[in-house]
Length: 339
Image 1 (cartoon, one colour):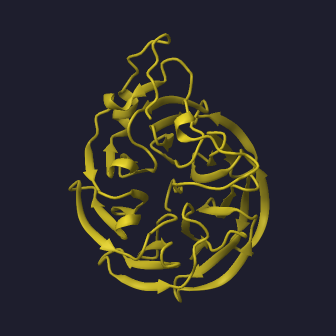
Image 2 (cartoon, helix red, strand yellow):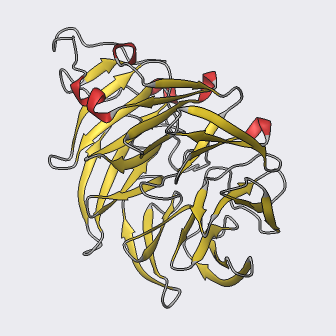
């Protein structure tokens, strides 16, 4: 899904470890870190009625809208919505850019649609099911990668033929996939592991224990970053050694959320906590904006893009403006997290 790809989510089932609800999330407790989102000035707010959720960034920003069965294209230069395209029933489980196309999984029709980036026209409909509505699709190593069932079947698609050319078996409950650092990375929310696949051999080469219910993942700063849903933490994995080098408390346990990397920071979103900024040098949350908004986040074109899923909006903000926005609260007067 692109640099800093991740996959936003809705709900999952893990009977052995019940997930906290979003309203139970309290965020970080470090004095001076939490800031009301109302104090942050956005460069633009795009009205996208429905449920704007999954995003991908290339020459434009694309965002899907499941109840409207569409994807919307935003031109970053004009700062305007330039097109809204019907893709099929209930686009879900991420977006990916590659091979001159936008790849859109559709949960309502159990297929993957391929759109031409220039014309916005559908060029192919692949009869390939999607494992879960909160997953991801990725491109890399001359292929498109997507999980096709809850048993852990990773499909490798040849973009020249639009057909599956290999199936790789990874842990059950795997839904999110990322291509980065010459490898394919997959999280299993059921087994609490990050799996590394070698695209040269189509073999699993590493299985790395991370936090509980890992799902969303992103790449940057030489690491793979994983948002763990049950704990509300972020696991940092060194892409060379395959070792967890840090576990960062973000305080956002529960369903939903997203993670991205770019502009020198790691960015996490959750409903009620639209933006949490992690400093990769210290592995700590240094800013956490609280209040209305949150669910999906991307970084690109010199901006941070974050959704307000519940209110049908997409916000664009300059990362320098985020860094310059300071908490007005003292350690004895912390703001209340948004609900």
